[in-house]
Length: 242
Length: 258
Image (cartoon, rainbow over all chains, first blue to last red; front, side, top):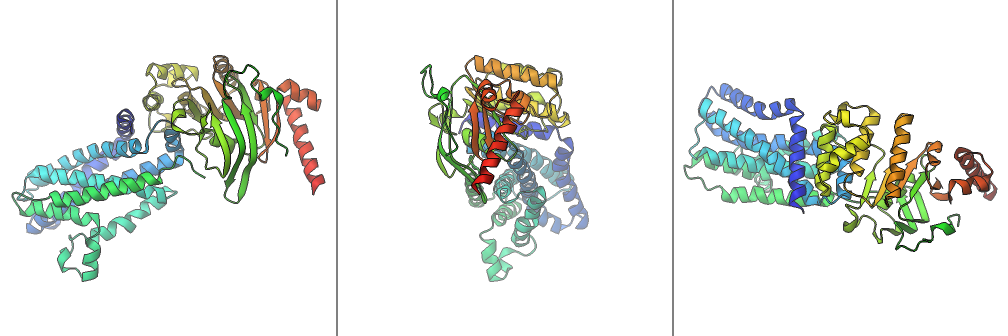
């Protein structure tokens, strides 16, 4: 790994995004709009306070999964990845470059969405807002890591998009948002215990309920999943291909 | 064995190991054995043309030299090191047939990125852009360029830094004749300055700009000679005639073997 190349890669990914203002706008504005829609659906009532923080965890995960998986798939199919790996680029330079770039975007997204939720929509969370934002950024990294890994198993953009209902929706259904995890059937609870999004939502629930939230255990689990997925992703980056 | 290594590839000047040395290379892609027991030597500071019908194994051979091709056997050494190994990654430049640059970046942004990756000075960026005649388009998005301009951005990437070996897969496809002549002059200049170039093409008149020609057919080395040598051997008037003659001969021989 070479810091120069990691940083250059992160800068390049951000530059690519800057040439695509519509995607930036969608990434930054849509979560806030959905948050407002949710507020409207629950008429600003207590259910909004309950679900809002969980959504703050899910948006960055979902959005970063989609952009990363498609962006990496493009690198794989356009030959740019092969060229980079024939140059002094290390696999970690590539992976961390993406994680860094989309981590920054996730930070901006989380700042906007949580500001809208807390200041405009009066979402009540007992814990400090900065912890909400920090958890959201870690969830974004989880999405980046999963997207990088999954892109190895798709050969077209159609396929990669289909991984969203396949890999993200089950996590969404089991993360405790619809039914608290301890009230799920035993088998499903066991499954939810090994899914990373469960811990992301747990962390947000903790911030909602406690003025001094203890989220490090949950964040550690999310981070461990991200690191493991990045390691698996690195294994799918091959210098030599058939 | 149809592969043969002619005398002139034995380094007469004796200055060190050859730029590229291939022994017994075997590449299998899917059900197909693309290259089998393939030998090749390329001297440093030479411009070699790699020619052959499509599907003859040109790109596979180039990928093996760059070290991005999975090989089933044999050795490929570049500058005395195993192909694709770490010490080679900023000394060997590679341009694929399909341009591998970012369509959603400008020409300059692409080259600045690759220059940073290679650790090449950023002043190389403008030099490379000028060498491929894209100075007027330096700040245009690559995705909006024409096909020929697009592939020239990819070529410019290979000119960053000071690569000792350049492996260029069809770098002049889709370019107008004036530009093609200019690029071949550039390739010759780079070789004169000491770089080793292996350039594939399917345009036979380009062959005449190389000091040495390699003709591949179905993974076999059909010829490895200078243009003059080829013309003398076949009695043809130009490169195209010589190659047609050689391919016909190989086909006849195959038919006879059956």
